Amino acid sequence: MIPEIHIEDYNYGLEDSRIAKYPLPERDASKLLHYKDGKACEYIFRDLPDLLPADALMVFNDTKVVPARLHFQRETGAHIEIFCLEPVAPPEYNTAFAATEETTWKCVIGNAKKWKEDILFLYNPDADSAVSAMDLRAELLNRDGQTGTVRFSWKDGSPFSRVLEICGTIPIPPYLNRESEQIDTERYQTLYARFRGSVAAPTAGLHFTRAVLERIREKGILEETVCLHVGAGTFLPVKSSLVSEHPMHREPFVVSRKLLEELKAGNRPVVAVGTTSVRTLESLYYVGVSCLETGKPADVDQWVPYTREYPYSTEEALGAILDWMDRSGEDRLTVGTRIIIVPGFRFRLVEKLVTNFHQPESTLILLVSAFVNGDWRTIYDFALSNGFRFLSYGDSSLLERPKA
Image 1 (cartoon, rainbow, N blue to C red):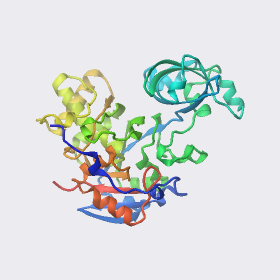
Image 2: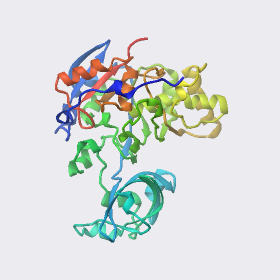
Image 3: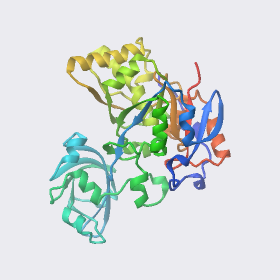
């Protein structure tokens, strides 16, 4: 049964002064709230390795934020902002980024009503020669409200990834109330980011430094990665009072055979770095159910975890994915998820979560509440009372799931 949850029950007072507009000079100097057995304590992020068990399996999301925000201008002078969401042609991220003449993307379009049928030219007020050489243009193929399908074309033979690097800006969250700056190019990206595709950073990973990662390895903690490309849906507020009316957008993810085998063995407590890693890991069970019942993996729908009881163990579900990989000759799982994690969700894999402090009345607050059996206010009251900084560039927390 889909839970009946009112989003206003997950509100808290967040003043603008508590939102971190910029990162601290040192990534690992952020505060760290440790929540365990109903109690919260304060540390510094570089203390994190000391708080983790030596036999843990730590899972990071190695997606990379792309400079996906582009500013164009009509001949009339009207400015149109185009925010690339996901590739349409070619449909795969890697091939779309490698395209050298044109590529088509699903986009969010700012000032959309002023864009008619004309072709747009990139706004280049400083007459930057590298930008001019690209001669980047945008053509609107279709539109649905604030989103649309846009064909980009350019002339200098560069791959589209290079076009974005030269012409685009990092899409920092709107609640920062400022334009992207040079500091965001480095700091709104994790040190371990590898695969281009996200329009928002998996922000829990922004605190990790090479020194912290080295201490984690020295302790014997096993590191693995998933890759979930974070979509613009992460910025969308919950507009309906009933959470059941809020649509989650599809986000693609990739998981390796090696990680699936580690998870199936079940020998290590799983520590997820960020809510994106949680959503990926917890989606795996339902991908496994699809393999068990249909013989192949399928995208995970938003409310699948709540609609019926599942008779399969986690080991059976993960084993079914591995069996499918054996049959199909695949060494990695590529699928998508719309999963929403709200109070009442049954966690099957993740025991500890590293995460930042999230917006009031957001789906991420719901995930935190589900993870700590409803005790989210203990965490947020402590953070508010002890000078913690909030949201993407803010401080961090290590949350331990209460024992059943």
